[in-house]
Amino acid sequence: MSSSKIRFMVDGMHCPNCVKKIKGALEEMQGVDEALVDREAGLVDVTYQTEQSRPEDIQEIINTIHGGKFFAARVGQL
Image 1: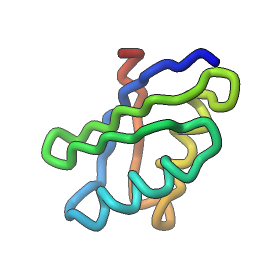
Image 2 (image 1 turned 45 degrees about the vertical axis):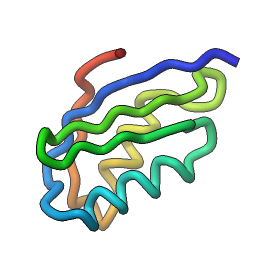
Image 3 (image 1 turned 45 degrees about the horizontal axis):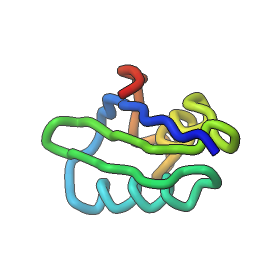
């Protein structure tokens, strides 16, 4: 399997609970190995299996967490 790492800028993260919601939702996703969430910087780095997940799917999950409270913009591959 081939893995890749991608970074998103995420608006709407205001508390530690936001970090838990995003990290938990992403790490439950099939093909996601790890999600690192930096609330202060507004960044989320995701390591995923390219055969099982797509960046668009990851972005969509972030944007639908907590009733659409968060907005993710793709920064690029790491």
